[in-house]
Image 1: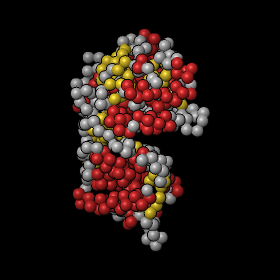
Image 2: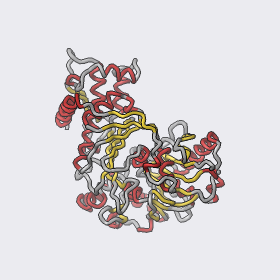
Image 3: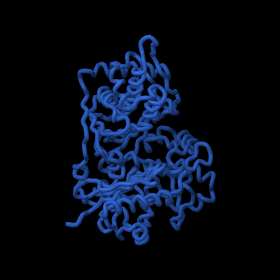
Image 4: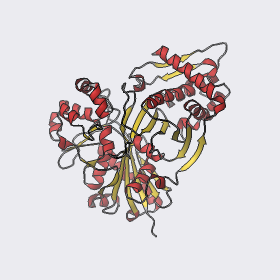
Length: 496
């Protein structure tokens, strides 16, 4: 039987990555990303962040060309295509499907006042009960900014899309979106199970601006003749999966069911947990969206916690406290200090306002330092413990929403390379940590296999996922971990 391959794109704000997965073996055979240096972000004014969608397409083409050449795979061998993408971006096209303005991407903050006003005018109760979030700085609020500040452009808009919808449109010539995508833009009403009419009416948006809705796993569209000629693909190749980067990261780590958690801990940290019932945090300390496998008959919500000051704190400590040693050596010296760092606590929120703290900006602080007792090893350990404790603080919000956290899936990268970090997270949370070798573009390819029916379900799709390590909570030290966490929370409350 001829080889079948699955193609996954991951449309990030730093680069666009493409991967080819052998559908039968489940193994990635080639991967590449462009640009090789970080992609430019246009910032015409303070707080603005825009990108040209054409750049994403050009980078996707270059990445695809490289992996097909490297793997010696022909377009006819690609059985399905999946797309992961940076969440919350706004792409506007006219009737000819031409982009009307640069995309307002996820980290652009100009729409904050529009979301806050809607939250106040419509009412917190209605927004939270129906949207599960404040309209905030999400896609709908960004479109409201365009409507007020660029009316000539707004009047020419035929459809609004998320970045992944745009790439799917370029591949197929067809405009559509998913419930998961609409929910991350604040366009989906979970209580009425339809497009959020009340928010559309409030902002003065016509319903026709919303594209056709297709399931996240399905034959959403097929590669057009124009795109096939441009990319070297086969006409009619199905596009069968789409997911925002955080839901897709969870999918990549085989996180589909209530109580399962996907986590990353790079410059910033993310904990993304699956909830099996419609719920929300009344203080909006976390965001809730439809997970990729959410449907009318099966509630699967992704609860997203973001901590700004994670790896960036560890890097600051490395740069300023122990500049002459490696990160691995940092872990070694931290391990010489007991759990709780002999009373030193670090509050790690030094990278701006934190949503989990109700958008307060309390900064980073070192607490309990004794010049006669403590040294750099205590600071290194306290930094890692402070990062873990901030994760656990947010996970408590998820538990208050009804999430029973038993397992955390993560890639073996960044902070998860540290045994101390992993052991502390398992020790405080009581959850088992499983580390995997995967990434977003590979996950998107596997998602395409599910959507195309090549895999019966996610169990089959991720049966070959490489589990590198399992970390169980060490019950011998459970009390010590919890006591250290309690002291950290007490310090946090004093700083609040």
